[in-house]
Image (cartoon, rainbow, N blue to C red):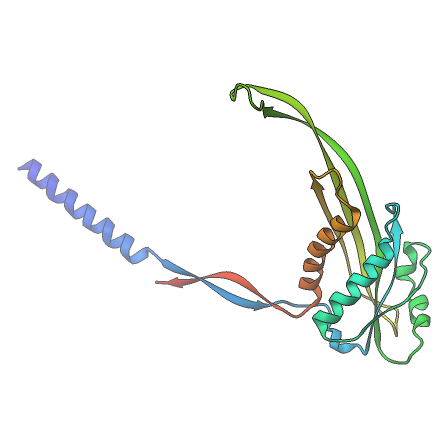
Amino acid sequence: MKKNKFFINKIFLLILLFFVYSCGSISYVEIKTDIAKKIPFSFEQFDEIMITDFLPENEIPDFDINKEMKDYFAQEIEVKTKRKVSTKKIPLEDEQIFKNKQFWANISEKDEKGIFITGSVEYKKEVRKALVRDKRKFEDPFTYEDQFIQRKMFSLALDLYFINSQTGEIIYQRKFNESKSYENPNQTAYFAFYDLIYSMKQKIFLDVLTEKQPQERYLIIK
């Protein structure tokens, strides 16, 4: 009799737990939606977009980082914004110049509202050696030997400024750093530069252009 009573109580408890779990559980569906990104300004506010000289540091011999930066950004921003972009030769003495409002306000030759794109840039390369363990070729596949592997490392650092040409006010400023190593010992500074600046450009455009970004969200279903 006691065994039957215990068995009945056990079944009742299991049914009760199942009922409580069913009522309390929450299911959800994962969805993707476009979320508008807040931007610091709009290029449509300005009549003129001007890429000025950049302040270079630690330049690589035979590579004009200033020219490459100006040409690259002028083309990419013009394509992306569908607006005319010009380049200006404005020698920069030191980093303090970016915060000199009077300097930038006096440069613009027109009364139109424009935006200067400038900053400091550092592009450098170095050769690094690493000791790795590798399988011996054409010998016992289960034996290893230590050997040095040489790689070229390129680094690009940019302190970017967007400045209002009428007021000299900084409307956007951010630092970017990209680096990449190459096994090819003959890797050129030009090839590496376009690898690094492309990655950097993607981040900059996410900051300053009005684009909807796909993000994951969860729709709760009770």
